[in-house]
Length: 320
Ligand code: FAQ
Image (cartoon, rainbow, N blue to C red; front, side, top):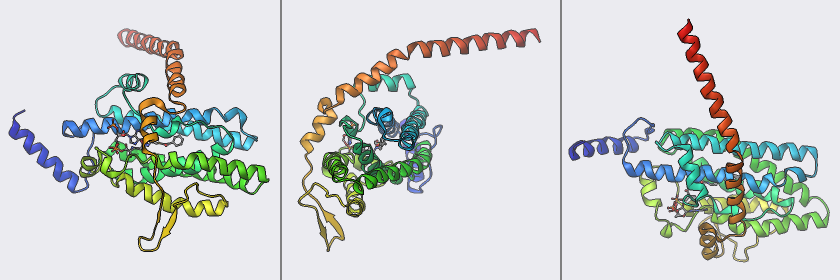
């Protein structure tokens, strides 16, 4: 294709973005648009799948049948989200095997939050309330993202995340209404998950290399800092309902901004976790790689069965 033709296609593409039209898999798109979408959507898919691990660990230890059923359903939903998102990524021309390979070799990132341990039952409440709460704020913005398959996947995912957030809040509400010991467990959980949840939104805007271009392409509809602030403003009143304290002495309502001011995030900790040195990075990767290796015989059997079906179908066609 000549340079002039590419320029023309770029002009049409930019006009479509400006008109808020969706870009679909077969449409022309700039190479960088394709690349950055593969990066973000696959990171999102990996996060869902790795995100099953801290909770999966609690299914057998849930305190009642009702809690077990809800947690099991939540973890299954996360597997489903991973599958929609891997499928959306594949529409951009990369294979599932390549995506898994990127995860298993540490080339692709996944959300920092899933490298923290879930050590008490209250953590199942905090993960739902805070982690799903943060995920929804980020993902509602993504329902209007410019790439069609991603935006459509987000609509369904947000509905399910909203249920997850409520069930997490309800776990904590029950603990907070219980014994002193149970309330202390809820407080301890908030203490450990609060700051990592704020980190989920990514680095500060001025230190976020991808934001500017992603906003232009309407991949990101709101900046990392705007979403983080929205999360804090929405979550502080919920902590008040629970009767537990957000572990930030600098958290204060700012009348002028009509928003909460908050303390300093430990960005050094964030980058340590992102680059593989969090409390559970090694454990999480070992679990994913182990599942892939142990599942090899299932993939082989499924392929052999599909091959057999294809051959018998061919035979039937040639006989008829
Ligand atoms: N963790 O320039 P930016 C969930 C990386 S789903 C690790 O600001 P961007 C459901 C970033 O990739 C949670 N890495 O990047 C659930 C980039 O590196 P790269 C996941 C992070 O993409 C709930 C570099 O830092 N959600 O929780 C993180 O414009 C409960 C510079 O950053 C999504 O993925 C981080 N927290 O903005 C499941 C939503 N933050 O790739 C189970 C979609 C940043 O250039 C239980 N993603 N990095 O090498 C997004 O909205 C964006 O990708 C951001 C980051 C906002 C995460």
